[in-house]
Length: 86
Length: 333
Image (cartoon, rainbow over the protein chains, first blue to last red):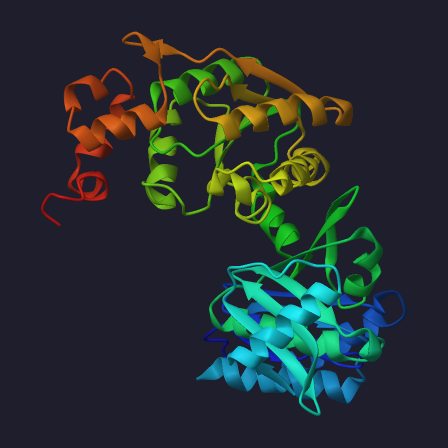
């Protein structure tokens, strides 16, 4: 799928994350997290997995995380992707 | 649940809560939201454009998630308006609470700290990664409303004494000429200078965020603090990225705010390793050249004299149908 518009999903609360998507020519993913040192790689792997699952090849993906568990990351990112489609 | 505060009673409670925390209830704002518990307001926050302010949680309710909820709501509303980076001014003691919400500290000085949510500064700088030149570079920050022979003189002089000169055009839309028009006049007016790159200041220099009083033109003591933040941000984040060792300014005989800003530059930048060179303003037809003089002449329709004050490229723009639409409000639209 393609990111067609600027959207946001999630919250700034603890154990949650905020996802921002924006159309772009290439795919860039930036992750800010209060637990980046400990879990940065795992967060990144989860984000890449969800993007791959939905065939996202371009767009700007920004994530600000406050220690969300992986299913929360998946749910927030998928919500944002669905909003970005139409 | 976070709700908009609209009724008279809501506002009264918000004012009381803000005052209780020691902050000022400060107009204007676009959004004012809060959280009630049993009819009593326990958290409040406001947003004016990209600035979040008056964020207060009642003493009895601190340590929970109320601040997160209020900020989430304000960011969500701002994002729907197309804003993707948000600022908050706070006291240095509260920096860690905002950092735990993923705000980044941009700059702190004495009593005030400026934080950003949305990673905007890094994205702004990354956009210009291909325009970073090595060497000992210089910078000019100017509004160019419109671009005059005075600006041209300053840029030429500055460019001849540095390896590369960055000319930052103020992004903020508070001027007669809109940003795209100013940017174009500057680009066309400096196209022949090989070591000059024209950039956009975005929100990170002389903007309503870093320097609100520049646009208000008032003598608020808060202005002095924010002038300092503007310059510290330039010195610590922008200048190092572009290898800027010197900032060039024109002497300021007219505007008090700009003269004040120039003085602050001499005071703040050199101790941080950035030289400040103030050049005497160029004169033409008996008085110093200034963009405000050009605007006054445009308003009076004195087109002949303007040719002495602006480069040919600016004159061409002013006389184009697009240019005329901007300054001749009484004419044909």
